Image (cartoon, rainbow over all chains, first blue to last red; front, side, top):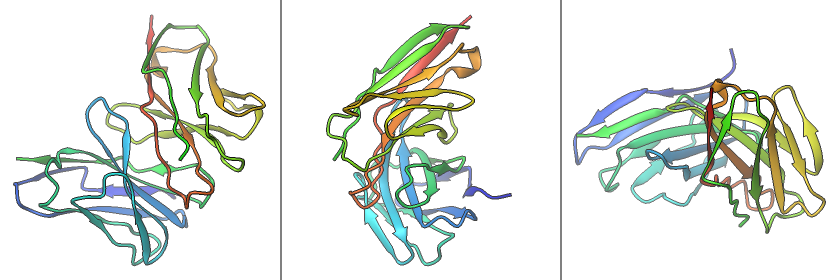
Length: 112
Length: 111
């Protein structure tokens, strides 16, 4: 089935460690996005990519990094520079300019 | 950038029609308006999208006035399972694909 897959669903990390969240889609979408959601809050854009080998910072990119080496994949690394990384992370993909996003089930990161 | 403003929360009862309005005063000519539904600990799900006038699908209607500075999502005869957060999103066609969500409206449907 076509869709977007995030892994892991739950992740625990010690302070000072980098972690990478996986996002894979088989919808043949050019655009991919990473959002962060804190409890009771809306979605905040971290990074987005419209095409392979190119990506742009969103509103809260500090402490995060991404790569887009393949159309299907857009991994997010939460670095030790991110001061408050505990959150729910959502990956999405869509056709350019369509405004219709398909979301993964999310990855919940907890820093111990 | 087009900014969206929605009510933070709304209450309703089963069987009622619910209308959620979103303001987007500086929407650009080519921008589409899309609404999403999100349940706790899940990714948002597409509900409906429109550009102008009225759009209807099997779950909702979307009303957009001529000036397009606002839009209203209409949910007919809500049930308890419609309790969720609803987001309107303006597709920033001319902004390189940067999609910014607003705060969303938390809808609570009571029996």
